[in-house]
Length: 124
Image 1 (tube, helix red, strand yellow):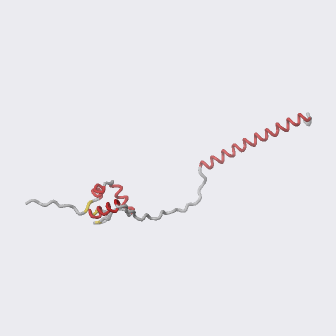
Image 2 (cartoon, helix red, strand yellow):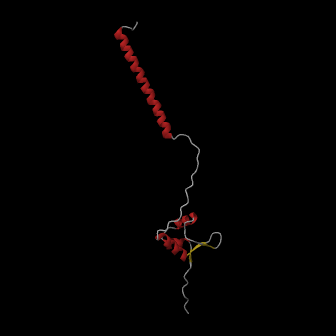
Image 3 (cartoon, one colour):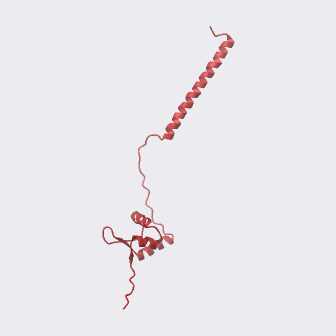
């Protein structure tokens, strides 16, 4: 007497991922985010996916079903120290300001020195 082949009603992670056509890790991520197919647990670590739930998951995805996305969590942070680029820009600005001031002072000394010689105000 030949035994009839038994078809499983549930698939483990790797088989369910193959059935869905995605990677094993992607299926784990979907389940941990709460966006994966319905599953059955047999204990603390045993999880299996009914084939009907996998088919329903595929149908939801192919008919344009968009699950409600949770609102992004905003984290309030304290203001930190300035970025390195900001600090570098401030240093460069101070450097160029000092150069411009030196050039201006040189120009003033040259102009007043030249005017002083031309008008005879220079004393020896």
